[in-house]
Amino acid sequence: MKKISEFNSSYNSGSVVGADYLTCYSYDNFNRLTHSSSKGSNILYQYNAEDYRIQNSVNGDVIRYLYEADQVILELNDNGEEVGRNVYGTNLIYREVLSENNTEAYYYLYNAHGDVTGLL
Image (cartoon, rainbow, N blue to C red; front, side):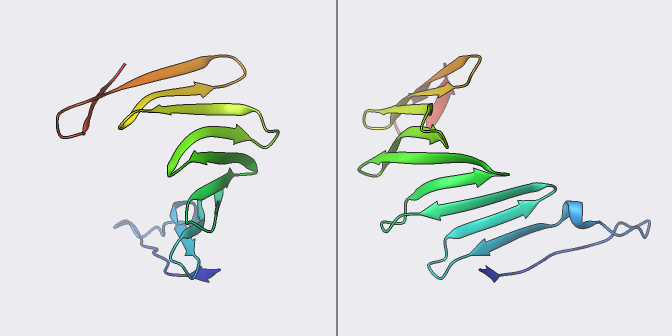
């Protein structure tokens, strides 16, 4: 893990910004983000041989990403339970986020240039 840079500053009143406001990023030798930490949040990222992110861990909560070609189609938690699903056409058409209490569904709307213009 290689630390690229740190930034710390102070307010005009003379009080120093504490470590809570400092964000640190770490990259591997392939210039992929592997770790970030900021204000009590600690995030780790893992990649496969094709440079696709296959897992992230936010303060110990793991999400694994399953791909079809180069598109994420399923997201699983550490127990292998489905927590997200994506449906693609030419672009992303539908996203479903599952939790213990409810399910949220989003339909994506695009303009002629392929830009997302709305969510239903």
